[in-house]
Length: 351
Ligand SMILES: *[C@@H]1O[C@H](CO)[C@@H](O)[C@H](O)[C@H]1NC(C)=O
Image (cartoon, rainbow, N blue to C red; front, top):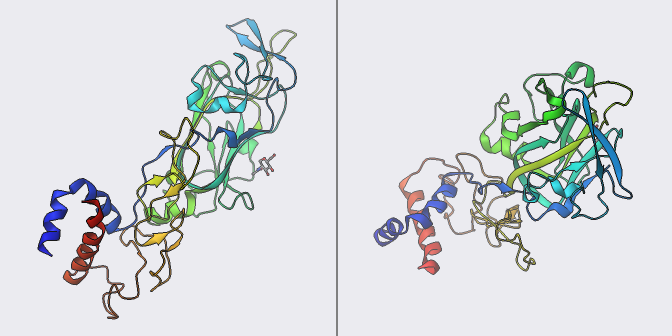
């Protein structure tokens, strides 16, 4: 064992990642999920897609400003297509719905499962008076609301409670901050998926497992902001989002700390910066989501990793047939040595 130990001290960076995963569940770093995936976004209503439309907003205290929305060509300066919500399109571009259309939804349909950490949405102009954020983790078969948000929860969602969720499927309504000039300034909505579970007694890995997985995400705007009625011609009512940021990673059940492109995936202009699709599996697991045991590691059933236990898949011979110690969490010498032995096998090709 001694040479292996030495080796492990010489290669701390390499081993560091292995160690994070060896103690229990490990997770890849998060990135902006929309980068390179705007083609999976759609909106149920967008202004100016078939012909230019004019909309008017309040300007200063007494004036109105009227602008054109022409989304027939994606790169028009006044095009307000949905892909403009990606951070890569910059702060001066935004998505906008048609006037007086309600409800409106924005939806992201991914082609695989990802782990969502948080959502940040910046509005251009008025903040909606009612909205909800929901997700599916089975490609749209079932949907679950993460959170309802409203200026006045009791009137917008009378059947939804407020406060902290007490179980996995217990969506609550959160009040949207009321700001004095909200009809002009826009505003921001933020949702951290883990914060939703802060009132639920469960481990971090259980929370990620239960709430973090998404294949689809939908934002329903259900109530337009009230427009101030001034003079004969009221301002237009619409929804507009300048930025939607979804931070997350590939979904690996706690069995990986890195995502990589799917083998043979085409490379595009954003390949270098985007969150990759597939997990680089540890714990003797395999599959794009580490959702099964690697071949020849089927000595016990696959399980997601826990905070304190990687639940690694085991080969028929690796741990011997001693019944004691198989599920033992304590780091006894025998287990330590077996792990080091495994590292030595893993380390070998990298030297
Ligand atoms: C959100 O909008 C979609 C499309 O209009 C609808 O099918 C869905 O039921 C809505 N979700 C909720 C929770 O009301």
